[in-house]
Length: 190
Image (cartoon, rainbow, N blue to C red; front, side, top):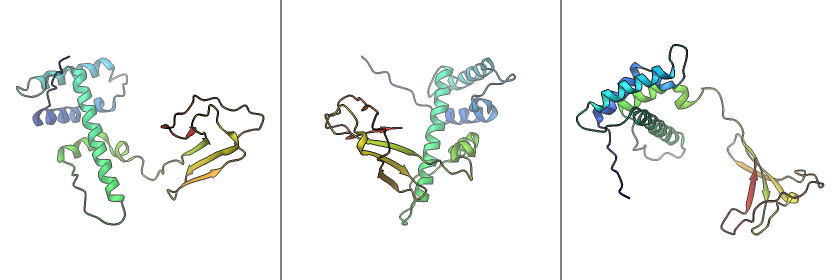
């Protein structure tokens, strides 16, 4: 099979795409109303397709591919913003990050909105808890007598503690497929 080379969009096409979405922000949200229907969205994407494919150089795509291109730009920009934010929250000093946000990426973040990028301010993330049951390689059942609870608390430390009250002694053992020695030596039940 022959691999088909993908055409990359040009900076001018990227600028046109961002400007088009700024003019039609309802395309970014993907939410339909009585006034903004799927048909209206499709017409706008087709209009964008005509504009983008009119460029002499660069990519030529169907409207669905241009919609995917917009989604990819948003995803990469949000990821880049998140990496910068994580770097700023690190402790211990160190050199500043080499990652920078361009003016165009700032525009994309502005279109997306602060809540989508950063989450709701003042709302902390919920606590995640798992029940972990020990399972040795080559076993086909989980040992209820040695169940462990794993939780991550606000101090960001992970705590593992034995949970002897996990299962009733009348419960039959959980049947699971054999675990190879290369796989994990425990099962997580959420």
